[in-house]
Length: 556
Image 1: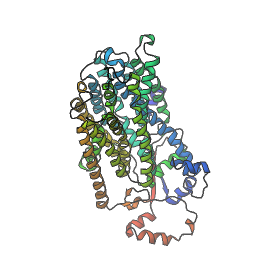
Image 2: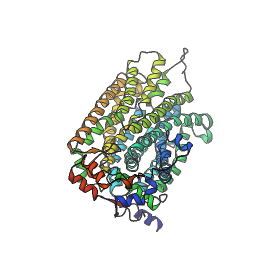
Image 3: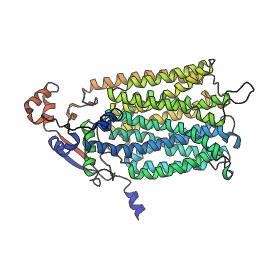
Image 4: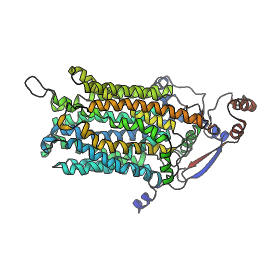
């Protein structure tokens, strides 16, 4: 009965409305919005690294809860997701090819069937979470299923079962990335979200880096133990550490601010979650309908975002680094690097990309700009791919080129942050954007790698790196198109930028911070200031504006 009751709670009940005036909000959440507070010296220094430290105590406690539950869980999930996928490449050069008698294009086909699974599952998974099963149930369940599929790869004796398992892994993992982008964008403000989104993406670099270390360690210590090859232990090890993470997700995922049931948030913090989103002009989630879904394709938004996003998705040349290393030989013809070194050397590029990702996200949050930093990351990828296409260069230059392709990784977190800012008025669109983008890129990548990076031609691909350099250039054009269309939409809808840099309607402008001399400011002076910015009708609405919050009836 307990299990049946648990599944009944998988779908959030209809929310109830709680209405507060702006004065009541300032009174109820005074401890969160106060400005007359002193920070310890340690917190002042730490605030340059992580913005949570520069807030009032109540606000700081709330943010630490979010980071320690939401971001920590998402970091672990993406770490394991990347580890699972990177391990196919590492296992291939660490004994799988010989043990299973693999040849030709089978390495690329493992990626192809995974992409097909991701295509099949991406959009249905998002609609399921919007309308039927809340993320706190759906996402951990999907992680448990893909973990089981990964572990079964260790038992495979031929390529056939691996194809089937990789397809299932793609289906189960397809919901994760779009959902994470939407949830992070629903809980964090513009000055907070780029760092969080990039921390999530940093997990991918950590996973890729750790996969090399783990594979090297397993080859050294467990290869042949109990008659099991080292590459098989890699998939077993993945499952052992993934299953507890999936179980942890059932407790720590908070769904969305207006429907959260998180036990680690107090009733006041749950209401504050909704209020602080509405203060920015962000809208609450509504039910996804077919009419709304197809309506997305009548707007520039889904095309403006997915132009650069799909092209970014298709550029994954850094995954061929170890195949290039494997081709390097000594004068006597022996391989220049051992299997352990083939797994370890690419980790240097991942470490550099992690550092650059954090630095660019921090500066982006500080200045409130996304496009310039995306273009810088794209430039790294372009230069790296161009040098690899030229090919006949000193080995040290090609080493640098391989690392440059990895330095383009900050693109992911920054463009997702940009979409969270630009489309803050449409939470359903934010969830569907990446699902559609992943579907399109997956449909293309399913066969593109077979043509551009055929395994028998490794490591010198005739036109693969040049093609990817062209995609880098086109994605830069797509970023500029996004900039133009976003500014055009703001002008056409006569929106204004609030203090967070988000474009909102004038009636959605709010500021709940409590200033010491606020009570001494004549109301007529505030109205005069407003009239200088907005028309008389907007001011009248702002005087009587109330904030209606949708709170799950079981949340408080």
